[in-house]
Structures are given as structure tokens and as C-alpha cells.
Length: 166
Image (tube, rainbow, N blue to C red; front, side, top):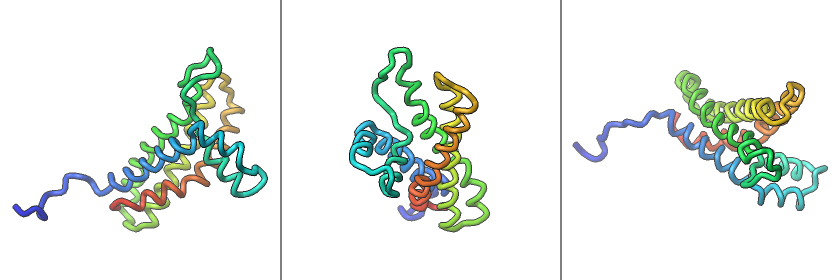
């Protein structure tokens, strides 16, 4: 058997979802880091479009330590952890049925973008409900912020999803 005739054991859907998942992990890891969050607060104008967008990218902020001894690191970082887990889950679930019917770059892009919007909304909702001061009103407000973040940052994940096979 020649080297070029190897059977393919990897599904075509896994690659697009995998690159989108890596982009989501990097987006949360880099833009949610304490160093980026501190920099963006000190060096951007919240009244301009660019400053607003850069500050929005820091929304899934995470910390390596807790300032409040009554809350652990997990309570503070629940939103970022849930965002990554849900983004990976939605990236693997959404494109499978959609991309099988319509195989195009636009389908991959919008599936990746939609998966990140859904993940951000659900992560905000669950983190607010499961957090220390969980109320339904606060959860609804947090969900609005999460969906806004997902809408404006999700195109990055959607673009990364274009790197794979449909």
C-alpha cells in the first residue's frame, strides 16, 4: 500500500471544530488573563469603539488566586471554564448536522460563530446562577453581556473554523 493511499480515520468534521475549539481556548486564555485585563483597563478609552471592543474581549476574566477567602478560585473562574467547555461542546455538536447538508465555507464560519455566541450566553447564565450571589435577575443581565461578548468575539472562532474540512 502506498503512502498516499492510507485510509482516513479522522472525521472531516473534527478538524473544523478542533481549530475553532483551539481559537476559543486561546481567546479565553489570552484575553481573559489578568495581564490583558489589567492592560486594557489602563490603556484603552471606554468611550471609543476600539477601547470598548478590547475591554469586551476581557469579559471571560480569570484569576490564578482568589481575593476573597470565602470563595475559591473555581467560583471566580467559573465563567471562563464554562465558556471553554461549552464552546468546545457546541463546536462539535452544531456543525455535524449543518455542515453535512451544506458544505461551504460560509456554513463553517456561521456554525463556529453561532457556537461561540451560544456558549458565551449559557456560560454567563450558569455562572451567574451557580455563583455566590445567584439570582435570576442577575443571571438574565449576565446572559445579555455574555451574548454580546459572543456576538462580537465569535467571528474570531468562526474564522478559525474555516481552517478545517467541512
